[in-house]
Length: 547
Image 1 (cartoon, rainbow, N blue to C red):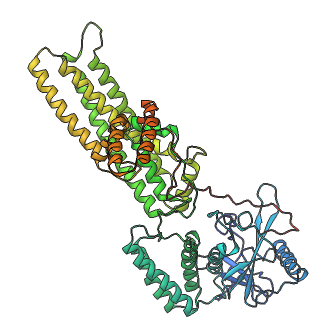
Image 2 (cartoon, rainbow, N blue to C red; image 1 turned 60 degrees about the vertical axis):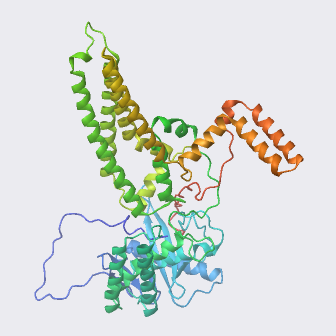
């Protein structure tokens, strides 16, 4: 858990006070600080308070008598809890107290934790649920306390970053962080699926910053900087199950052994009408959002490519719209007498789909430029909100494919309108030449589609796919060939068994052979994305405490 320093902050009235600066005043101190409390300033500028003897840190303004009394009562109750349970606390540990204001119901939630500087971990003198109370919900497979070891260490380094006063970074920590960054730099430079969430140049700059921090060690600036970097990299270890046999070695690898179900009928029906674009976008989303975790680098590349595609589709749709307007202006296209020809109807459909492509493309471009999705947390929150309970990310993939699908249908209907105009003439020579050109272009386009078809399975040669299609449509010939081979090689019993299987196959309906509808779900390399657990805070009265 973390102190909500950036979410709950103090404000002041814009009116100034009535005071005068005394002569020769050169020393300025913070007034009304209670006895034994030290005011400390974070490198970011936030004022916090530290009690050296009791090793207590707090963001609460202890200069306020009411807040000071509540902090003292809070600390007393925590100490009584330790004594009543006969617990022995580590020698070198800190206590952090915070009063979270309840804006609706009033009062405060009492938040606290202990930080052990020796083991670099947080702990509590009471039992805690890792998800509900410690707010560890990014990973669902928490089987044992060891699974949250690195997350608690990451929270410890966040504690060091938040309260750098009184914490000195040892040379061992500098060496460890340097080693982490060194290997991360090598890994992201040599692996396309590295779990490192930063670019190679960014990791290289971090290495330089560590050298600078080591030169000014034992300062709050160096302590806060190292604490932030350690928090980032140790938290990344937690997300990738560092130190486990099932550790994630690549960002496209899932560690969950769940079975991925087949696509729903929605996308299976719409994909052919959308030129298979939803399937392509869905696989792209599934590759970058693994186990509910997303890295900003692949997400940024994915969205960047989509935005470029949408811009191009809008441009092409605009050109196609102008072409349709020019086509309708041809005198021979208009049938006259108020009648509408087939060429005109096809051109009208092309105009509608072109306008739809432009509108949807502009909306998608604006949505992904205005809404902030520049961080991994924002991207994960965005995908989680768009994920359907049954459909998953299929609806989002379909929306992403709309500009492409509408543009393709606009182009197809425009070509259909042009064909009606060409083949509607009485010149047989022009019809034959145009038909020959159409056949040649159709063959080339079909060849291109078959060769570059993006399938969810491994790519196979076109000849193998054609053989499989022929075998499904004409299973009798394949059975006869298989029977002949069996006679030459196998025994009579094997031949009889082959005949029985062949007869059973021939009894099936032809559509059942061509379209095998009964398939068992296969185990894929990545699992269905688990939901991100939402931390729940329990509202407690002033006299109680919660973690």
